Amino acid sequence: MTEHSDITLAYLAGAIDSDGCITIVRLTYAVRSGKGRTPPFHEQISLKQASSEIADLLKETFGGWRWDKPAKGTHRKMYEWRAECSLAVAAARALLPYLRIKRQQAELLFKMDRLKEQPREGLSPPSQYRNRWGSITTVRHSMISEEQLRQRETLWHAIKALNMNGNNVRRPLLI
Image 1 (cartoon, rainbow, N blue to C red):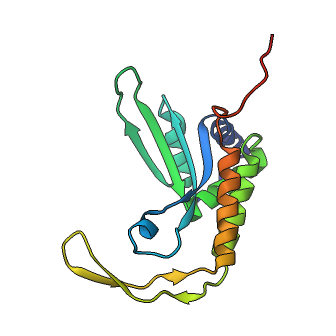
Image 2 (cartoon, rainbow, N blue to C red; image 1 turned 45 degrees about the horizontal axis):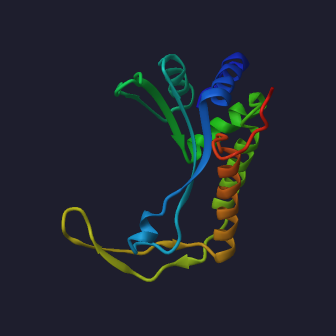
């Protein structure tokens, strides 16, 4: 990531505050399919908008992925940007001084990043599965402790609660 002006970072932080999402993703496929003992977690920042300018600027500034989602039915074409793992953490660090609404989510990303840097317990016993080409693959996964899993789950639940869009929250009627 190159050095960018305060104005650009403030502009992008405003876009993330309004139309973006800062979250922790928990992937459960490996556990459900028997290929892992604990779900992996990763940090993610994304943005969806009806115009491409900000998504392009985020891609240029921080890297990550940028794609177009075609119009469907009555919905317009959407432009998306996403950064995950270390790219998301780096972007959140750069945007943090300017974030107002999603500041707590960014701070939870940093906590998750620190948790992921802790040493792991060791390797799981070997497990075998048939890969998509039909051959048998043997894998061993690094394992985290129950305490590390509990800490990651706690952060995941906390960021999930912060990101609720209000559909499940009763708000007082303004008369």
